[in-house]
Image (cartoon, rainbow, N blue to C red; front, side):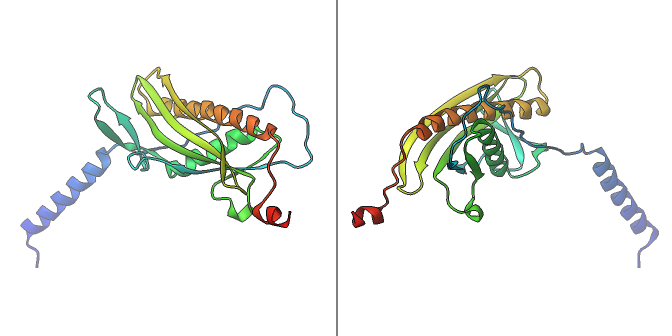
Length: 214
């Protein structure tokens, strides 16, 4: 049986735990948002809209986590325990890029990876993001490369890379997320420009089966 000293000890422990929980700051959750706007000029309608798949997308293991990653002046890394992504970062980035490109390419149908539920696509944009982080109060940074592949032939028909950086007005994580969203908007514009060039080319519709028939 518990004596009065044991009970007092348990009460003190529980009180300490409750005090610690009460003093812990709340965790804030953030999500990236689409930043693109429709093209200024109207585009003519086409008979069949090309199907464009955004993804797959790769992120460094360092970034593929709940916490927002920050860099310090001495090149060390900090993880924001109380400022986290509301959804898996990779999924959020693909969703935002897909929405941005869909707005920028009104004459195309854009699908986010994986798109198997919708059937095949005509082109896929494969993306590799190597940096997507911040130094609080100073800048946000996005470095990425992409290739556009024709789905039927698996031929790479375009590629590119970006190194983007934007200054920060303050050291809040809300500002960080807003500026990262803007960088994704700029990245989407670069992808869209590549897609414009690709879609203007005559598409090679000869499959191996067609070649054998000929």
